[in-house]
Image (cartoon, rainbow, N blue to C red; front, side, top):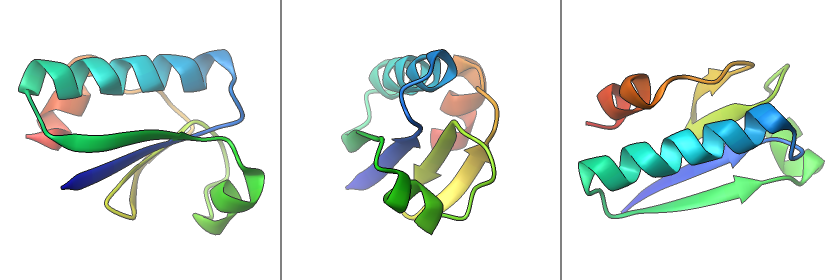
Length: 77
């Protein structure tokens, strides 16, 4: 099962990334685990310089920007 993590302290962009990711997963009908990570120690462990961040199966895919639902669907399919 794919594990998707949205990294961020809870800012507006972090929330938008979570919603976009949730929508992309739903539209694709994927069976995955989607989680919001707000713990700064965990976020720092991924060595991203700016939030929000998107991690899929332990690999950072995006950092510091919010991809569109279409970009996320492309990445996830």
